[in-house]
Image 1: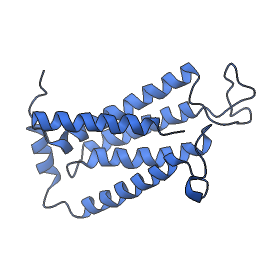
Image 2: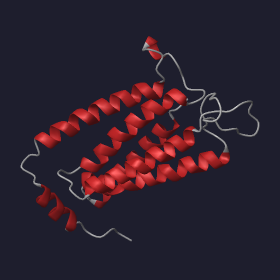
Image 3: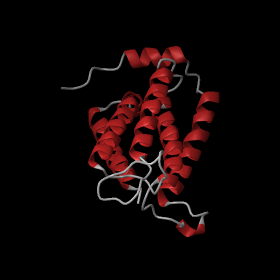
Amino acid sequence: GGMTSFGGLIGGVGVGLLVMHLRKRNLLDSADLAAPSLAIGYFWGRIGCFLNGCCFGGACPEPLGIHFPGLEGTVHATQLYSAFAAAVIFGVLVLVEKKRQFRGQIILLFALLYSLYRFVVEFFREGATADLSGIASLTTAQVACLAIALLAGFYYVYRMRYQDGQTAESVHEDAENLPAPAR
């Protein structure tokens, strides 16, 4: 319940790390470039879930609920909640990218925002694993999201305060000098 996205993310990150190592690319610069695409990919994935009629939420009264064939009653359209959140995350990442202050800022912000959104939407999802180790009936995904959000949030604040002498201008100059992607 709710952990499939994390598996895909972990697998994708693993392959990405391998490719970055083999091509000798800066991991944080590459991750920053990829982060907005992750948000857009997630947006379209959730739209696909909505059209497929999967990944819906729990029971929800009309007019807020939506009816899917084969279900009794109406449910939360968590796929659309997720698509909306992904679009907002994309917009925030694009805005922040223009004034990026340190390497890894955009991917870190993605991790923070995604985890916060996902923590909230899990309350509306159907079939989530509940009551993990007696922690206030949180799902496994919610506990993972809390951990990621806390780590990302603390590290984001730390990096914003202590940028190791990196200025926004030096980060942008370095980013402009990135080699073109291999074809």
